[in-house]
Image (cartoon, rainbow, N blue to C red; front, side):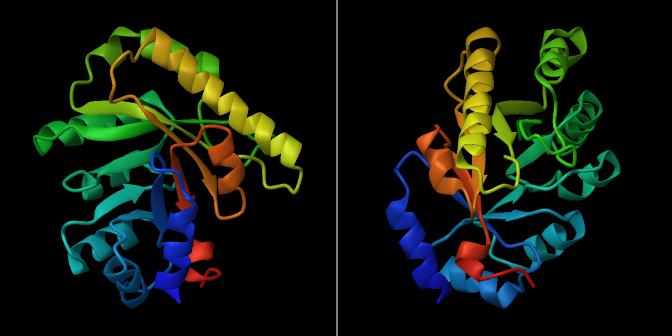
Length: 219
C-alpha cells in the first residue's frame, strides 16, 4: 500500500519538486517500505525520534528536520542532518553554525516565514529576516548555507486564502533571491503538505512535505 501511494504521488509531481516523506510517529518497518519503493528523503519533527531512526536505518537516507527546533537540541542532529526546514531565529542559526563547525560540515537550512493567519505557526516576519540578513553577525556564519524558504499555510478549506499565503512565500523567496542569494544553490521553496501540496506546486513550491497521503493517518 505504501509503495502504491508513494508512486502515485511521485507520478503527479513535476520533475523540479522534491518529495519529503513525513515519517514522524511511523515505525521503522513502515518507513522501510517507502525506502524499498525508492524513497530516500524523509522528514521528522522530533529530534529524539530523528536520531534513533538515523541510527537504525540505511545511511543513504537524507534526513530533514521539519519541526520546530530548539537550540539545545541542535547538537544531536548536527553530525548527519541533510536539511533543517524550520529556522526562525538568529539564535538558532548561530547554534547550527557552531555545531556545523564542530563537525566540520556546512549545514543546509531554510528560513521559515510566518505566512499563515494563525498565530500558532512559527517563523520570521519579513522585516525581521531582512534585518538579520543585513547584519554583520549573519555574514560571519560560515558553517550554514541558506538554500531557500519554508512556510505553512493556514489550516483551512479556503483555497483562495491558501493560494494567497503560498504566493506571499514565493514573493519572499524572489525578494531574498534578488537581494541576498544570487547563487544557484538558493533554489528551494518548501511549502505544501498532504492536504494542499497540489496548490503549493501551482504556486511555485519546489519541495513538498507529505505524510498521511503516503503512510495513512497519524498514529
